[in-house]
Image (cartoon, rainbow, N blue to C red):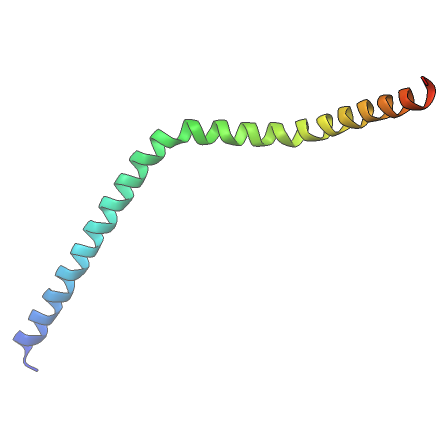
Length: 78
């Protein structure tokens, strides 16, 4: 291969890399724009999920208490 062919090959490869980098830049830019619009909803979803970790045991305890009252009432209020 001559020097001219090597340089032409390098230029083709650098042009290909430039196209790939431009495509990556466009994807990152669109991702950042989408994340700005999704962020509030995602934060609300995370807050609900964290709240449910506390709420589920409370609801389970309340259900168990109601079940115990019903069972006691059936046994003692005949």
